[in-house]
Figure 1 (spheres, rainbow, N blue to C red):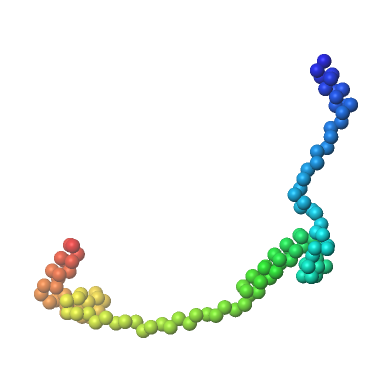
Figure 2 (spheres, rainbow, N blue to C red):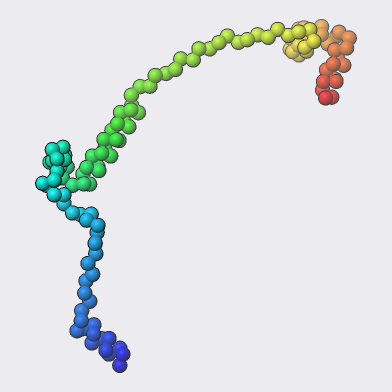
Length: 118
């Protein structure tokens, strides 16, 4: 019985469409309230989407032009290397000819071995 009543109600009372509000997303701007700049822009770009695309294109072209322009290269001045004179207590390099003379001196071999042990 209940299903029969439902079938009758559907056929007699069709489903009504529900109005949906879109927050005036597609509403056209009133031409009387526009100032001179707005009228000039709207003459070439009538829709809001056109203005948004034009602004994005403007920023993209600025970025492209900025990236293409040559950049100033910083000139790095190289300083001459600082040469530190070693004292007599320092160990000379193994490759230097002074190492043979230094290692043959008494006590220097012990200095190396105690330095390695620490």
